[in-house]
Image 1 (cartoon, helix red, strand yellow):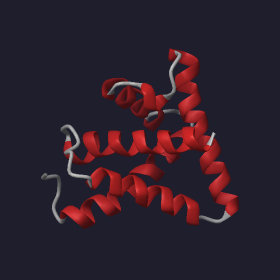
Image 2 (tube, one colour; image 1 turned 90 degrees about the vertical axis):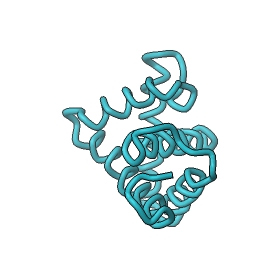
Image 3 (spheres, helix red, strand yellow; image 1 turned 30 degrees about the vertical axis):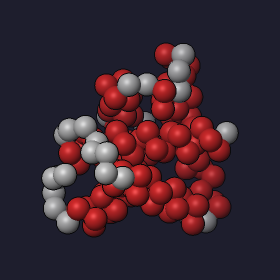
Length: 121
């Protein structure tokens, strides 16, 4: 299950960088991999009482995709990922909205600290 968690976090980060920060495909210069490593490191450094619920909710996010489409979140093309993220971001359930906001908040730090600008490559 840890591989599914890491794959899901990676796919979430790539989708957020493409849609929220760039509004374009992710550049192949390794910056997005830095975002993924940062997010995973922050998750790993969180206290257990936060780390496990975040992991379980992230897995639920991916497995809901699996239940409705037959594939986990990270196995989808960009458009389907964006649609699933948007559905959770706009959900009536606060916990879903908060999960997306959590990943947006964490991903923005390494992305903009490295680029030093708004959204250029």
